[in-house]
Length: 152
Image (cartoon, one colour):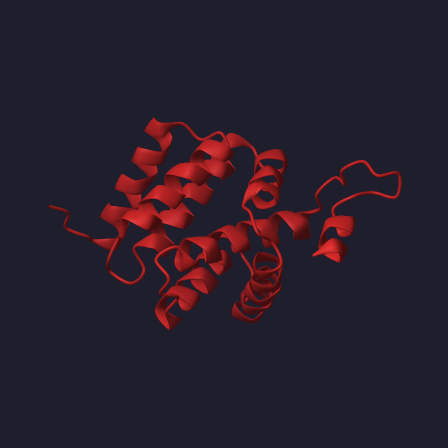
């Protein structure tokens, strides 16, 4: 954990500027966090994360799997969302952050069931990356329509 924290700081002790790789790992780590939020990380959710990353970042399946592996390590070594959400907030414009919320909804719905824990996590992350409630709700509606989910 100490090595992870040191890696977040530059040599003079100030926070490091996130790189593109850091931002992609942070995004993938948040998607993994969404999949883990209901304590049931299924293969279908792992594959959904790979698929979402492929589409969003225009990368190969192999690159997406490598990104997921790196993100799983980062997520396992972190006890909080703050580093990942701060990296996303500081690295991406609002339009990309809204797309990130769509990605989270896709993962939350990947197993066909939206748990209250998954919905709460998406709500928390949206707040931490400065995505409004309206944009978060609109993102969920787009994902529900795209996935053909009938909600009660």
